[in-house]
Length: 632
Image 1 (cartoon, rainbow, N blue to C red):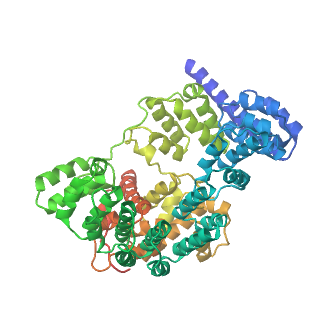
Image 2: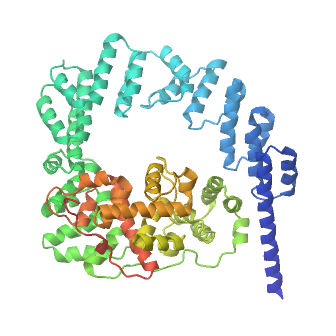
Image 3: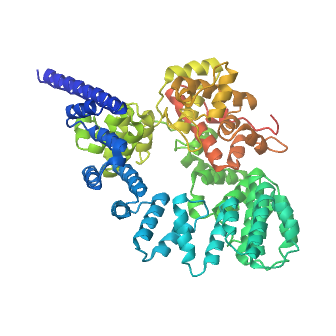
């Protein structure tokens, strides 16, 4: 009888929650239609619904330009612990700036790291005569090598007018702009200098755009501080495109000018690293000849990679053993240390390292297991060690309760803000429970990100879920693709967030660039897709698998190459192919110049192996890693 009552209460609670969610949607729709009275009536009915404040926030955003400071102050105070309070305050600051209400602007400004709002705060202080330490604070914004918002223009004008050495301040920012690869900003700033200095900036500008042509002219230039800086910059620019050509110019010019030790080290390091990225055989000698004081992490890593590429096992063994501890202990270099030991006949020590690595469920762990002919260590252990009472757990975590409701209301940005604010207040075990709840709700990207904050790595059903299984298997069969590979790409690209958007504009589960999606749609005889079409789960998987099949065909079904092409484009992969003989895939992957792509390929290969386990398949990761040819 008790159980029946409990079930009845639970059913009633669920029904009430569903009713509140419906009322929320109705209120949001009424506000969107500007039916304010209906909105207010519905708001009253929502009573203490956890997500109700977000409707009040929507109302505030709609009316902010008409609000008074006192009302806004009370609103921000009431909801101070809500993530939206930060954004509401930012909108209010824009309103105050538009009103030129500088007193209230400074009253509400919270010192946030937003350059536009910071510059408006500087403007407010200028208007009100609050000038103490102002130039020192402006200098921190000034000394950035990137263009800043237009709100900073009057502030920067004041900064230069009241600077003890305005020309020096200009030069400092010009140098930073060139270093940040913002030559147009440097050229713009140069217009404020005298004519002689403008000519120097113009020389630097041309050196940035056409380094080789400029180096020919600069070899006969006077030995001045500025010319030395321009030459070093031109050498670096040329090295990024043609390291060996840059080396030729550096060898011709380095003794003609009084370069500082730092400039010499910087130029030599840049040439050596660029030669390595470009897979030039000379890179090995260039890196080996660098002084130990010049060797940074990248130099150590690429010296090892070039030794790998040339099969210099004795040199690789020495290099790995001389690496800084934080590099030496990485799984990557423990694996290659084992391989170099094996090549040098140190079989016992090599085997011991492989045995340790083979226990790890990772790319290098799977490589080690394949070498030892051992099964992979992929054993499921639940993150939550006991059954979770969802309602009790959420009742004790108001941020998380709001996150759940916002998630089911399809306000995913707000939901994520609440969720990750909630995690700040949870202990280790509670975070594991939270990850399990997110997975239960099919909120996979948050579940994966949440469990990543713990040391728990063995709940594979949580970390490697298989949503959209029907579509994935359907398109895998239609395109003759490995479903584990599709899942591996999807997991790496979006963590299964169907609305994922990258900073460069890639969209959806399989992170398609709009141009790629349009090209695929055209080849499939479909109409030009809008962004909303690309974000559709069905379309995204269809377009993504079609493109994945295209790059698989392009590279003879070599998974490592296809994954690299999916991430960096077929053109880059073609440039990275070995120039002459065939190369083993593990060695090729290790020497991919783009760190992002190198990590991407390793992740896709490892993830595909984990998904094999979930699909009940026993496939060696190394079977997906065919040798890399010089032509495709």
